[in-house]
Image 1: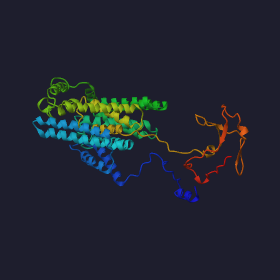
Image 2 (image 1 turned 135 degrees about the vertical axis):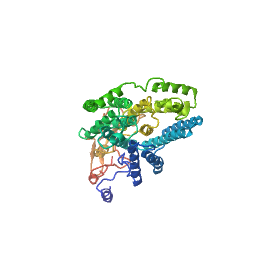
Image 3 (image 1 turned 180 degrees about the horizontal axis):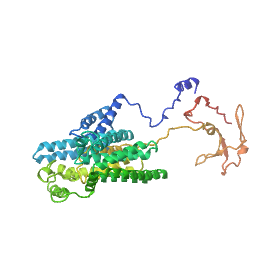
Image 4 (image 1 turned 45 degrees about the horizontal axis):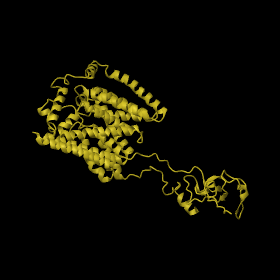
Length: 517
Protein backbone atom coordinates (compact mmCIF):
# COMPACT_ATOMS: atom_id res chain seq x y z
CA UNK A 1 0.00 0.00 0.00
CA UNK A 2 1.62 3.25 -1.08
CA UNK A 3 1.48 6.54 0.77
CA UNK A 4 -1.12 8.03 -1.58
CA UNK A 5 -3.50 5.14 -0.95
CA UNK A 6 -2.99 5.36 2.81
CA UNK A 7 -3.71 9.06 2.72
CA UNK A 8 -6.97 8.59 0.84
CA UNK A 9 -8.11 5.83 3.20
CA UNK A 10 -7.37 7.65 6.41
CA UNK A 11 -8.30 11.18 5.35
CA UNK A 12 -11.68 10.82 7.09
CA UNK A 13 -10.11 9.55 10.31
CA UNK A 14 -11.69 6.07 9.84
CA UNK A 15 -9.92 3.20 8.05
CA UNK A 16 -11.44 2.24 4.74
CA UNK A 17 -12.84 -1.31 4.74
CA UNK A 18 -12.00 -3.59 1.86
CA UNK A 19 -14.82 -4.57 -0.45
CA UNK A 20 -16.94 -7.30 1.11
CA UNK A 21 -15.79 -6.60 4.67
CA UNK A 22 -18.18 -3.81 5.53
CA UNK A 23 -19.79 -4.10 8.95
CA UNK A 24 -22.75 -6.50 8.56
CA UNK A 25 -26.20 -5.27 9.53
CA UNK A 26 -25.41 -1.63 8.93
CA UNK A 27 -28.68 -0.13 7.66
CA UNK A 28 -28.75 2.36 4.87
CA UNK A 29 -29.84 5.88 5.79
CA UNK A 30 -33.60 6.30 5.57
CA UNK A 31 -35.02 8.88 3.24
CA UNK A 32 -37.44 11.55 4.40
CA UNK A 33 -40.29 9.68 2.73
CA UNK A 34 -39.50 6.53 4.67
CA UNK A 35 -39.22 8.41 7.95
CA UNK A 36 -42.59 10.07 7.42
CA UNK A 37 -44.12 6.73 6.45
CA UNK A 38 -42.80 5.08 9.60
CA UNK A 39 -44.20 7.95 11.66
CA UNK A 40 -47.57 7.40 9.98
CA UNK A 41 -47.43 3.69 10.86
CA UNK A 42 -46.70 4.51 14.50
CA UNK A 43 -49.53 7.05 14.62
CA UNK A 44 -52.02 4.66 13.01
CA UNK A 45 -51.29 1.92 15.54
CA UNK A 46 -51.18 4.26 18.53
CA UNK A 47 -54.52 5.86 17.64
CA UNK A 48 -56.14 2.42 17.45
CA UNK A 49 -56.67 2.92 21.19
CA UNK A 50 -59.25 5.67 20.49
CA UNK A 51 -62.47 4.05 19.33
CA UNK A 52 -65.35 6.24 20.51
CA UNK A 53 -67.02 6.07 17.09
CA UNK A 54 -67.11 3.79 14.05
CA UNK A 55 -65.19 4.24 11.84
CA UNK A 56 -62.39 5.38 14.14
CA UNK A 57 -59.54 7.81 13.28
CA UNK A 58 -57.16 4.88 13.00
CA UNK A 59 -59.22 3.43 10.14
CA UNK A 60 -58.58 6.43 7.92
CA UNK A 61 -54.85 6.25 8.67
CA UNK A 62 -54.67 2.52 8.11
CA UNK A 63 -56.50 2.74 4.79
CA UNK A 64 -53.91 5.27 3.67
CA UNK A 65 -51.08 2.96 4.79
CA UNK A 66 -52.54 0.06 2.82
CA UNK A 67 -51.83 2.13 -0.28
CA UNK A 68 -48.77 4.09 0.91
CA UNK A 69 -46.48 1.35 2.25
CA UNK A 70 -46.33 -0.69 -0.98
CA UNK A 71 -45.82 2.48 -3.02
CA UNK A 72 -42.82 3.70 -0.99
CA UNK A 73 -41.27 0.23 -0.86
CA UNK A 74 -41.60 -0.54 2.86
CA UNK A 75 -43.16 -3.97 2.33
CA UNK A 76 -41.91 -7.34 1.15
CA UNK A 77 -44.42 -9.64 -0.52
CA UNK A 78 -42.99 -13.16 -0.58
CA UNK A 79 -44.80 -16.51 -1.06
CA UNK A 80 -45.89 -16.89 2.62
CA UNK A 81 -47.41 -13.40 2.59
CA UNK A 82 -49.16 -14.11 -0.70
CA UNK A 83 -50.58 -17.37 0.70
CA UNK A 84 -51.77 -15.49 3.79
CA UNK A 85 -53.50 -12.90 1.60
CA UNK A 86 -55.08 -15.57 -0.59
CA UNK A 87 -56.57 -17.40 2.38
CA UNK A 88 -58.03 -14.18 3.81
CA UNK A 89 -59.51 -13.30 0.43
CA UNK A 90 -61.15 -16.74 0.19
CA UNK A 91 -62.70 -16.28 3.65
CA UNK A 92 -64.03 -12.84 2.70
CA UNK A 93 -65.28 -14.09 -0.67
CA UNK A 94 -67.46 -16.71 0.99
CA UNK A 95 -68.62 -14.02 3.40
CA UNK A 96 -70.02 -12.17 0.41
CA UNK A 97 -71.55 -15.41 -0.89
CA UNK A 98 -73.38 -15.86 2.43
CA UNK A 99 -74.99 -12.41 2.06
CA UNK A 100 -77.01 -13.54 -0.96
CA UNK A 101 -79.89 -14.87 1.13
CA UNK A 102 -80.07 -12.10 3.76
CA UNK A 103 -83.07 -9.78 4.12
CA UNK A 104 -81.17 -6.57 4.92
CA UNK A 105 -78.17 -6.20 2.64
CA UNK A 106 -76.89 -2.98 4.23
CA UNK A 107 -75.73 -4.45 7.54
CA UNK A 108 -74.39 -7.64 6.00
CA UNK A 109 -72.37 -5.90 3.29
CA UNK A 110 -71.07 -3.34 5.78
CA UNK A 111 -69.90 -6.09 8.13
CA UNK A 112 -68.19 -7.96 5.30
CA UNK A 113 -66.59 -4.78 3.95
CA UNK A 114 -65.07 -4.07 7.37
CA UNK A 115 -63.77 -7.64 7.47
CA UNK A 116 -62.17 -7.16 4.05
CA UNK A 117 -60.53 -3.89 5.13
CA UNK A 118 -59.11 -5.48 8.29
CA UNK A 119 -57.82 -8.41 6.25
CA UNK A 120 -56.02 -6.11 3.80
CA UNK A 121 -54.55 -4.18 6.71
CA UNK A 122 -53.27 -7.44 8.24
CA UNK A 123 -51.63 -8.42 4.93
CA UNK A 124 -49.86 -5.06 4.58
CA UNK A 125 -48.71 -5.22 8.22
CA UNK A 126 -47.34 -8.72 7.62
CA UNK A 127 -45.47 -7.55 4.51
CA UNK A 128 -44.18 -4.53 6.44
CA UNK A 129 -42.83 -6.78 9.22
CA UNK A 130 -41.38 -9.30 6.75
CA UNK A 131 -39.12 -6.63 5.25
CA UNK A 132 -37.43 -5.63 8.51
CA UNK A 133 -38.74 -7.98 11.24
CA UNK A 134 -37.05 -6.63 14.35
CA UNK A 135 -37.29 -2.93 13.56
CA UNK A 136 -40.90 -3.12 12.33
CA UNK A 137 -42.10 -5.27 15.23
CA UNK A 138 -40.56 -2.93 17.78
CA UNK A 139 -42.24 0.00 16.06
CA UNK A 140 -45.67 -1.66 16.04
CA UNK A 141 -45.54 -3.07 19.57
CA UNK A 142 -44.16 0.21 20.92
CA UNK A 143 -46.98 2.17 19.30
CA UNK A 144 -49.53 -0.29 20.68
CA UNK A 145 -48.00 0.08 24.15
CA UNK A 146 -48.21 3.89 23.93
CA UNK A 147 -51.85 3.74 22.87
CA UNK A 148 -52.65 1.24 25.63
CA UNK A 149 -51.14 3.55 28.24
CA UNK A 150 -53.36 6.40 27.03
CA UNK A 151 -56.45 4.18 27.11
CA UNK A 152 -55.52 2.80 30.54
CA UNK A 153 -54.95 6.26 32.01
CA UNK A 154 -58.29 7.40 30.60
CA UNK A 155 -60.06 4.38 32.09
CA UNK A 156 -58.52 4.92 35.54
CA UNK A 157 -59.33 8.64 35.46
CA UNK A 158 -62.91 7.94 34.44
CA UNK A 159 -63.46 5.21 36.99
CA UNK A 160 -62.26 7.29 39.94
CA UNK A 161 -63.87 10.44 38.45
CA UNK A 162 -60.58 12.33 38.38
CA UNK A 163 -61.69 14.62 35.54
CA UNK A 164 -65.03 16.47 35.24
CA UNK A 165 -67.50 14.41 33.27
CA UNK A 166 -65.00 11.58 32.92
CA UNK A 167 -67.22 9.05 34.65
CA UNK A 168 -69.95 9.34 32.00
CA UNK A 169 -67.56 9.36 29.05
CA UNK A 170 -64.90 6.88 30.14
CA UNK A 171 -66.91 4.20 31.95
CA UNK A 172 -69.72 1.82 30.99
CA UNK A 173 -72.00 0.02 33.48
CA UNK A 174 -69.73 0.97 36.36
CA UNK A 175 -66.68 -0.50 34.58
CA UNK A 176 -63.71 1.32 33.08
CA UNK A 177 -63.92 1.54 29.29
CA UNK A 178 -61.42 4.34 28.69
CA UNK A 179 -61.28 5.41 25.07
CA UNK A 180 -63.26 2.35 23.93
CA UNK A 181 -66.99 1.80 23.74
CA UNK A 182 -66.83 -1.57 25.53
CA UNK A 183 -64.89 -2.45 28.72
CA UNK A 184 -64.26 -5.95 27.34
CA UNK A 185 -62.47 -4.55 24.30
CA UNK A 186 -60.36 -2.24 26.47
CA UNK A 187 -59.31 -5.18 28.66
CA UNK A 188 -58.33 -7.25 25.65
CA UNK A 189 -56.46 -4.33 24.07
CA UNK A 190 -54.32 -3.99 27.20
CA UNK A 191 -53.09 -7.59 27.14
CA UNK A 192 -50.46 -7.28 24.33
CA UNK A 193 -49.18 -4.09 25.94
CA UNK A 194 -48.88 -5.87 29.31
CA UNK A 195 -46.85 -8.70 27.77
CA UNK A 196 -44.59 -6.28 25.89
CA UNK A 197 -44.02 -4.11 28.98
CA UNK A 198 -43.15 -7.26 30.93
CA UNK A 199 -40.73 -8.29 28.19
CA UNK A 200 -38.98 -4.91 28.24
CA UNK A 201 -38.85 -4.89 32.04
CA UNK A 202 -37.20 -8.32 32.15
CA UNK A 203 -34.65 -7.64 29.40
CA UNK A 204 -33.54 -4.19 30.51
CA UNK A 205 -31.11 -3.36 33.31
CA UNK A 206 -32.84 -2.84 36.64
CA UNK A 207 -32.36 0.92 36.71
CA UNK A 208 -33.63 1.26 33.13
CA UNK A 209 -36.59 -1.07 33.62
CA UNK A 210 -38.33 0.94 36.34
CA UNK A 211 -40.30 2.93 33.76
CA UNK A 212 -41.63 -0.27 32.20
CA UNK A 213 -42.48 -1.60 35.65
CA UNK A 214 -44.52 1.55 36.30
CA UNK A 215 -46.25 1.15 32.92
CA UNK A 216 -47.03 -2.46 33.82
CA UNK A 217 -48.65 -1.29 37.07
CA UNK A 218 -50.85 1.26 35.26
CA UNK A 219 -51.93 -1.28 32.66
CA UNK A 220 -52.68 -3.90 35.31
CA UNK A 221 -54.81 -1.50 37.36
CA UNK A 222 -56.80 -0.49 34.30
CA UNK A 223 -57.25 -4.15 33.37
CA UNK A 224 -58.63 -4.85 36.83
CA UNK A 225 -61.07 -1.94 36.65
CA UNK A 226 -62.55 -3.19 33.37
CA UNK A 227 -64.06 -6.09 35.35
CA UNK A 228 -63.83 -8.21 32.21
CA UNK A 229 -63.60 -11.89 33.10
CA UNK A 230 -62.32 -12.72 29.63
CA UNK A 231 -59.62 -10.05 29.78
CA UNK A 232 -58.47 -11.22 33.21
CA UNK A 233 -58.24 -14.79 31.96
CA UNK A 234 -56.37 -14.07 28.74
CA UNK A 235 -53.96 -11.74 30.55
CA UNK A 236 -53.04 -14.60 32.88
CA UNK A 237 -52.72 -16.97 29.91
CA UNK A 238 -50.55 -14.60 27.88
CA UNK A 239 -48.20 -13.83 30.78
CA UNK A 240 -47.92 -17.51 31.71
CA UNK A 241 -47.10 -18.48 28.11
CA UNK A 242 -44.50 -15.76 27.81
CA UNK A 243 -42.75 -16.55 31.12
CA UNK A 244 -42.73 -20.30 30.50
CA UNK A 245 -41.35 -20.17 26.96
CA UNK A 246 -38.84 -17.47 27.89
CA UNK A 247 -37.68 -19.61 30.81
CA UNK A 248 -37.24 -22.88 28.89
CA UNK A 249 -35.58 -21.25 25.88
CA UNK A 250 -33.11 -19.17 27.88
CA UNK A 251 -29.46 -20.18 27.44
CA UNK A 252 -28.17 -18.87 30.76
CA UNK A 253 -29.11 -19.66 34.33
CA UNK A 254 -28.78 -15.99 35.21
CA UNK A 255 -31.58 -15.14 32.77
CA UNK A 256 -33.78 -17.84 34.28
CA UNK A 257 -33.22 -16.50 37.78
CA UNK A 258 -34.02 -13.00 36.55
CA UNK A 259 -37.26 -14.17 34.91
CA UNK A 260 -38.39 -15.94 38.09
CA UNK A 261 -37.36 -13.07 40.36
CA UNK A 262 -38.98 -10.30 38.38
CA UNK A 263 -42.09 -12.42 37.76
CA UNK A 264 -42.54 -12.99 41.49
CA UNK A 265 -41.80 -9.32 42.20
CA UNK A 266 -44.51 -8.30 39.73
CA UNK A 267 -47.05 -10.64 41.33
CA UNK A 268 -46.23 -9.37 44.81
CA UNK A 269 -46.49 -5.77 43.62
CA UNK A 270 -50.00 -6.43 42.25
CA UNK A 271 -51.32 -7.55 45.64
CA UNK A 272 -51.45 -4.08 47.27
CA UNK A 273 -52.67 -2.65 43.97
CA UNK A 274 -55.52 -5.14 43.95
CA UNK A 275 -56.31 -4.46 47.62
CA UNK A 276 -56.47 -0.72 46.97
CA UNK A 277 -58.76 -1.16 43.98
CA UNK A 278 -61.35 -3.29 45.81
CA UNK A 279 -61.19 -1.43 49.12
CA UNK A 280 -64.49 0.42 48.54
CA UNK A 281 -67.78 -1.41 49.00
CA UNK A 282 -69.06 -0.71 45.49
CA UNK A 283 -65.89 -1.98 43.85
CA UNK A 284 -65.79 -5.05 46.08
CA UNK A 285 -69.37 -6.01 45.24
CA UNK A 286 -68.82 -5.52 41.52
CA UNK A 287 -65.64 -7.55 41.66
CA UNK A 288 -67.35 -10.42 43.49
CA UNK A 289 -70.17 -10.37 40.95
CA UNK A 290 -67.89 -10.31 37.89
CA UNK A 291 -65.50 -12.91 39.32
CA UNK A 292 -68.16 -15.65 39.16
CA UNK A 293 -67.82 -18.03 36.22
CA UNK A 294 -71.42 -17.63 35.06
CA UNK A 295 -73.80 -14.71 34.97
CA UNK A 296 -77.58 -14.63 34.69
CA UNK A 297 -77.35 -13.81 30.97
CA UNK A 298 -75.13 -16.84 30.32
CA UNK A 299 -77.58 -19.62 31.22
CA UNK A 300 -81.03 -20.55 29.95
CA UNK A 301 -82.33 -21.09 26.41
CA UNK A 302 -82.13 -17.37 25.70
CA UNK A 303 -78.74 -16.93 27.34
CA UNK A 304 -75.29 -17.01 25.81
CA UNK A 305 -74.86 -20.78 25.93
CA UNK A 306 -78.38 -21.36 24.63
CA UNK A 307 -77.62 -19.09 21.69
CA UNK A 308 -74.49 -21.05 20.88
CA UNK A 309 -76.51 -24.27 20.71
CA UNK A 310 -78.89 -22.58 18.27
CA UNK A 311 -75.90 -21.46 16.21
CA UNK A 312 -74.62 -25.03 15.93
CA UNK A 313 -77.98 -26.17 14.55
CA UNK A 314 -77.99 -23.34 12.00
CA UNK A 315 -74.46 -24.13 10.89
CA UNK A 316 -75.38 -27.76 10.24
CA UNK A 317 -78.40 -26.71 8.17
CA UNK A 318 -76.72 -23.93 6.13
CA UNK A 319 -73.42 -24.93 4.47
CA UNK A 320 -73.09 -21.49 2.85
CA UNK A 321 -73.96 -19.60 6.04
CA UNK A 322 -76.82 -17.28 6.84
CA UNK A 323 -75.01 -13.96 6.35
CA UNK A 324 -73.41 -11.49 8.72
CA UNK A 325 -75.70 -9.97 11.34
CA UNK A 326 -78.63 -12.32 10.68
CA UNK A 327 -78.30 -14.42 13.83
CA UNK A 328 -79.30 -11.71 16.36
CA UNK A 329 -82.09 -10.47 14.08
CA UNK A 330 -84.14 -13.60 13.60
CA UNK A 331 -82.74 -16.41 15.73
CA UNK A 332 -81.55 -15.10 19.11
CA UNK A 333 -81.78 -11.87 21.13
CA UNK A 334 -78.00 -11.27 20.96
CA UNK A 335 -74.86 -12.27 19.10
CA UNK A 336 -73.48 -15.77 19.38
CA UNK A 337 -70.44 -14.61 21.44
CA UNK A 338 -68.11 -17.10 19.79
CA UNK A 339 -66.02 -15.89 16.87
CA UNK A 340 -65.58 -19.35 15.37
CA UNK A 341 -69.32 -20.05 15.32
CA UNK A 342 -69.82 -16.54 13.94
CA UNK A 343 -67.41 -17.21 11.08
CA UNK A 344 -69.29 -20.38 10.13
CA UNK A 345 -72.56 -18.41 10.23
CA UNK A 346 -71.13 -15.46 8.29
CA UNK A 347 -69.01 -17.29 5.70
CA UNK A 348 -70.32 -20.87 5.57
CA UNK A 349 -68.43 -24.08 6.01
CA UNK A 350 -65.55 -23.13 3.71
CA UNK A 351 -65.05 -19.66 5.18
CA UNK A 352 -65.31 -20.92 8.76
CA UNK A 353 -62.94 -23.81 8.12
CA UNK A 354 -60.48 -21.45 6.43
CA UNK A 355 -60.56 -19.14 9.45
CA UNK A 356 -59.94 -22.04 11.84
CA UNK A 357 -57.08 -23.33 9.66
CA UNK A 358 -55.52 -19.87 9.46
CA UNK A 359 -55.60 -19.25 13.20
CA UNK A 360 -54.42 -22.75 14.13
CA UNK A 361 -51.64 -22.75 11.54
CA UNK A 362 -50.30 -19.36 12.57
CA UNK A 363 -50.24 -20.37 16.24
CA UNK A 364 -48.55 -23.71 15.60
CA UNK A 365 -45.84 -22.17 13.42
CA UNK A 366 -45.47 -19.25 15.80
CA UNK A 367 -44.90 -21.48 18.81
CA UNK A 368 -42.48 -23.61 16.79
CA UNK A 369 -40.46 -20.50 15.97
CA UNK A 370 -40.59 -19.30 19.59
CA UNK A 371 -39.31 -22.60 21.01
CA UNK A 372 -36.38 -22.66 18.58
CA UNK A 373 -34.88 -19.63 20.28
CA UNK A 374 -35.05 -15.87 20.08
CA UNK A 375 -33.56 -14.73 16.77
CA UNK A 376 -35.74 -11.61 17.01
CA UNK A 377 -34.90 -10.85 20.62
CA UNK A 378 -38.07 -12.38 22.08
CA UNK A 379 -40.41 -10.22 19.98
CA UNK A 380 -41.88 -13.31 18.29
CA UNK A 381 -42.74 -14.75 21.68
CA UNK A 382 -44.45 -11.51 22.76
CA UNK A 383 -46.64 -11.46 19.66
CA UNK A 384 -47.41 -15.20 19.72
CA UNK A 385 -48.31 -15.25 23.44
CA UNK A 386 -50.63 -12.25 23.02
CA UNK A 387 -52.23 -13.67 19.88
CA UNK A 388 -52.77 -17.08 21.51
CA UNK A 389 -54.57 -15.46 24.44
CA UNK A 390 -56.90 -13.45 22.17
CA UNK A 391 -57.55 -16.54 20.03
CA UNK A 392 -58.64 -18.33 23.20
CA UNK A 393 -60.87 -15.40 24.15
CA UNK A 394 -62.59 -15.82 20.79
CA UNK A 395 -64.43 -18.81 22.27
CA UNK A 396 -66.45 -16.51 24.54
CA UNK A 397 -66.72 -13.30 22.51
CA UNK A 398 -66.70 -12.12 18.89
CA UNK A 399 -63.19 -10.92 18.01
CA UNK A 400 -63.47 -10.87 14.22
CA UNK A 401 -63.49 -7.04 14.09
CA UNK A 402 -60.94 -6.30 16.80
CA UNK A 403 -58.18 -4.20 15.28
CA UNK A 404 -55.50 -5.38 17.70
CA UNK A 405 -56.28 -9.00 16.79
CA UNK A 406 -55.52 -8.31 13.12
CA UNK A 407 -52.45 -6.31 14.15
CA UNK A 408 -51.03 -9.26 16.09
CA UNK A 409 -52.01 -11.67 13.31
CA UNK A 410 -50.12 -9.58 10.77
CA UNK A 411 -47.09 -9.25 13.05
CA UNK A 412 -46.83 -13.00 13.68
CA UNK A 413 -47.29 -13.87 9.99
CA UNK A 414 -44.70 -11.25 9.03
CA UNK A 415 -42.19 -12.67 11.52
CA UNK A 416 -42.81 -16.17 10.20
CA UNK A 417 -42.38 -15.01 6.61
CA UNK A 418 -39.16 -13.12 7.29
CA UNK A 419 -35.68 -14.54 7.13
CA UNK A 420 -34.35 -15.08 10.66
CA UNK A 421 -31.59 -12.54 11.35
CA UNK A 422 -28.09 -13.95 11.60
CA UNK A 423 -25.77 -12.88 14.37
CA UNK A 424 -22.94 -12.03 11.99
CA UNK A 425 -19.66 -10.87 13.55
CA UNK A 426 -17.70 -8.10 11.88
CA UNK A 427 -14.57 -9.49 10.25
CA UNK A 428 -11.40 -8.51 12.05
CA UNK A 429 -7.75 -9.54 12.27
CA UNK A 430 -6.49 -9.70 15.82
CA UNK A 431 -2.84 -9.53 14.85
CA UNK A 432 -0.68 -9.82 11.78
CA UNK A 433 -0.58 -13.47 10.67
CA UNK A 434 1.82 -12.97 7.76
CA UNK A 435 5.03 -13.91 9.64
CA UNK A 436 3.47 -17.28 10.50
CA UNK A 437 2.19 -17.89 6.99
CA UNK A 438 5.57 -17.02 5.46
CA UNK A 439 7.65 -19.48 7.55
CA UNK A 440 9.25 -22.40 5.68
CA UNK A 441 7.53 -25.74 6.37
CA UNK A 442 8.61 -29.34 5.92
CA UNK A 443 6.61 -31.52 3.55
CA UNK A 444 6.78 -35.21 2.83
CA UNK A 445 7.60 -36.21 -0.70
CA UNK A 446 4.58 -36.27 -3.03
CA UNK A 447 2.55 -39.47 -3.01
CA UNK A 448 -0.91 -40.61 -4.01
CA UNK A 449 -2.33 -38.97 -0.90
CA UNK A 450 -0.63 -35.72 -1.68
CA UNK A 451 1.70 -33.63 0.44
CA UNK A 452 1.29 -33.28 4.18
CA UNK A 453 2.49 -30.47 6.39
CA UNK A 454 4.28 -31.94 9.38
CA UNK A 455 5.53 -29.02 11.41
CA UNK A 456 7.83 -25.99 11.06
CA UNK A 457 11.35 -26.74 9.89
CA UNK A 458 13.86 -27.41 12.68
CA UNK A 459 16.25 -24.73 13.70
CA UNK A 460 19.40 -24.84 11.59
CA UNK A 461 17.84 -26.34 8.50
CA UNK A 462 17.33 -22.93 6.92
CA UNK A 463 20.13 -20.38 6.84
CA UNK A 464 18.91 -17.13 5.24
CA UNK A 465 21.51 -14.79 3.88
CA UNK A 466 21.40 -11.54 1.98
CA UNK A 467 21.37 -13.26 -1.41
CA UNK A 468 19.62 -16.58 -0.95
CA UNK A 469 18.42 -19.15 1.54
CA UNK A 470 20.67 -22.17 2.13
CA UNK A 471 18.93 -25.45 3.02
CA UNK A 472 20.77 -28.12 4.98
CA UNK A 473 19.10 -31.33 3.77
CA UNK A 474 21.08 -33.40 6.26
CA UNK A 475 19.26 -31.65 9.08
CA UNK A 476 16.03 -32.92 7.57
CA UNK A 477 17.00 -36.61 7.41
CA UNK A 478 14.64 -38.70 9.56
CA UNK A 479 12.42 -35.74 10.16
CA UNK A 480 8.87 -37.03 10.60
CA UNK A 481 7.44 -40.53 11.03
CA UNK A 482 7.39 -41.48 7.32
CA UNK A 483 9.97 -43.34 5.28
CA UNK A 484 9.52 -40.94 2.45
CA UNK A 485 12.25 -38.38 1.93
CA UNK A 486 11.38 -35.01 3.37
CA UNK A 487 11.96 -31.85 1.48
CA UNK A 488 11.67 -28.17 2.26
CA UNK A 489 9.46 -25.87 0.27
CA UNK A 490 9.46 -22.12 0.22
CA UNK A 491 7.20 -19.82 2.18
CA UNK A 492 3.46 -19.81 1.50
CA UNK A 493 2.54 -16.95 -0.80
CA UNK A 494 -1.11 -15.86 -0.39
CA UNK A 495 -3.03 -15.28 -3.63
CA UNK A 496 -4.59 -12.08 -2.33
CA UNK A 497 -3.02 -9.27 -0.31
CA UNK A 498 -3.60 -9.26 3.45
CA UNK A 499 -6.49 -7.19 4.78
CA UNK A 500 -6.23 -5.37 8.08
CA UNK A 501 -9.19 -3.75 9.81
CA UNK A 502 -8.73 -1.03 12.39
CA UNK A 503 -5.61 0.59 13.75
CA UNK A 504 -2.92 2.49 11.96
CA UNK A 505 -2.24 0.48 8.83
CA UNK A 506 0.68 2.68 7.85
CA UNK A 507 2.98 0.79 10.22
CA UNK A 508 2.33 -2.55 8.52
CA UNK A 509 4.86 -3.21 5.80
CA UNK A 510 4.83 -6.13 3.44
CA UNK A 511 7.96 -8.15 4.25
CA UNK A 512 10.26 -9.16 1.46
CA UNK A 513 9.93 -12.84 0.70
CA UNK A 514 13.26 -14.74 0.66
CA UNK A 515 14.14 -16.87 -2.29
CA UNK A 516 14.62 -20.59 -1.75
CA UNK A 517 17.48 -22.72 -2.90
